[in-house]
Structure formats: C-alpha cells, structure tokens
Image (cartoon, rainbow, N blue to C red; front, top):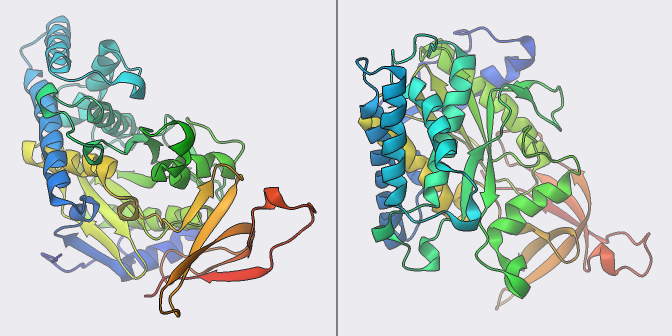
Length: 407
C-alpha cells in the first residue's frame, strides 16, 4: 500500500469533548491518510474466489446505478415510485432467491432504496441535507443493508461454483442509529455500528465447525444475555461508522478520533480481536479505516454520488461477506465452543520438533485489552478441560495465558 499524501492533521484542528482528548491525540499521531489499498485488505486470498466476488460486487453496483438513473427531476412522485418498483422487480427476477437467508420482499427493497437514494442523488429530495448527520444515518444504513440483501441473491448466471464462492456472512447495520451502546464505559452515542450475521451452510453434527458462527455470532450471544439485534452491543460490534457533516480536514479528524474512542470498548469486550474496521463519512464522501496496533489507516475518499465511488464502496462491503475471518480482524485461535458453552483458546508449542496444538478452556479474564494501539495484551486463566466437565463446580483453571500481538 502506498500513501498519495502524508497526513497533515493536527490535534488542534477540531473541537471534541474533553473525554475524547486522548483519542484525538492518538488519531492525529497514528493516522496514515489517503492510503491506496486499504479496502484490498478485505479481499479473499484466493484469486479465483476474489474474481467471483468482484463480479458479484459489480452486478450489485450496476443494480444500484440503474436505480440512481431512474431519479430525474422531471418525474413526479408517483412516476418515480413506479419506475423504481419496476426496476427492482426486473433486477430481482434476474437473481436467485435469497432462500432462508432473508425475508425481505420487493416492497422492503423498494422502501430501502427510496431512503438511500436521497443520499446518492443530490437534490432529489428537498427535505434531505447531506450536511445533516441525522439525515445521513438511515440512508447509509439502508445502503449497507441493501447491498447485504443482494449478496445472497446472485445473478442466476453467476451462481457460486463451490462452497468457497458462497458468502460466509452478511454485514448489516444495527437498527438503531445514533444510539447508546450496551457495555460501553461511559455510554456515549455511536452514529452507526455494523454486525456480522453468519450464514450457515453446514448443519447437523458438523455445525459447530462453521468458523464464523463460533467466532462471531455465538460468541456474542453467549457473552451478553441482553444481546439485541436493534441496539449496538460492544461484544458483538464488527465495525463502527462515524458520520460527519462535511469532509473537511477538521471534520474527518473528529471522525477518526471517535473511531479510536469507540474501538477502545470493542477491544475491551472482544477478546478475539486483532484489528478493527471502521468507516468515516463526510457529506457524500466515505473513507474505509483500519485501526491496527501502530497505525490508523484511512483510504482515499469514495464519493457515493459518483459511479466510480459507489462501485469502490460496494466492492469493499461485498468483500467483507466473503473474505477469511482473520481479514475481518478476528483471531481464529480464540473462539466460542458450542458444546461446552465456554471460550476455547488454541496454543501451538513451537519448541518441539513437530509443533503440536493444545486447546485450553477459559475460566477467567484477568487482563483485558483496553487500548487501541499497542500489543493488545490480554491474560486468561484457563484449564485443560471445559468448566462443564468439572466434577467440582468450584474447580478453577491452573494455567495463565498471556496473549499479545507483536508490534
């Protein structure tokens, strides 16, 4: 990846509440802005699979472009509705049914399109302002959810040839926007948050080996009894989206700073996170962000009002549905075990001539990762058998594992 320009952001270029002071300073220090290739981090490592994914993304972008083209000032409201409904019906007829992975109807898809087209088509709705953050939240969320719906509705002549070409998950927005998240230290508001909905193609006795399911969905459900599909919940959040009213330098730094602030709670609640994805928008322009151990990478702007910008954003969103789990920022060696209802941690003994893997079972978390940048050190008390197999319910773990990522 290469940077087309170095970041000139300074920590004094925007106003934020005092609680964001540290996050603002960290964002300014670690930011590498306008980086080529940030979105490519989420591409599938298999070239053939990625070519298939790219075709899927292009077909979704063409669908949305066709909807954009139907929005014309000369059309009345009723005429526009008829045009959009006819386009959606024709496009969905070219695609495979979603099956068990979605219950959305044509009417649902139409309602979703009406919302996000306000953002994609400047001036099409006099009541909408791209500089009003609260106007943008639902539009951005609907666009993300609309793309997710089409991920499981491939063109009939582009059906997956193998299990590898099946989407592994759908990335959707939580229903509530600009909402307080559960499990946050200070209960601050999050503009938008995204979650991963696992698509299970493996059933029966082998279901527990579906990686996404035990790394994301089930782990979240078991981690918090109050888990909700509506309100963002830090044990479950995949990525955070920050919406700013404009794309100026100061506004974008504010967005980056808030990503840093929210990511603290993601690390605090998710013990299997290596890095975190985020999106920051200003007006109609969007940047993809990665918060790693010693960097905050931000892509170039993707303008949703342009064909090229939409394609780039849609391709990025679709990649999230297909790529391997480590590319989402999850550590595959820490996962939730269905059968024993506890977290399992795999460790490899590399000191032996023939490295061996041992699985330990979590008893207690004694050190959590509370900082966004650094080694993300965590410490776990674990045992050699799951707690559910203890003859004595008071039996505790006898091994301390220190988990940290090299910088």
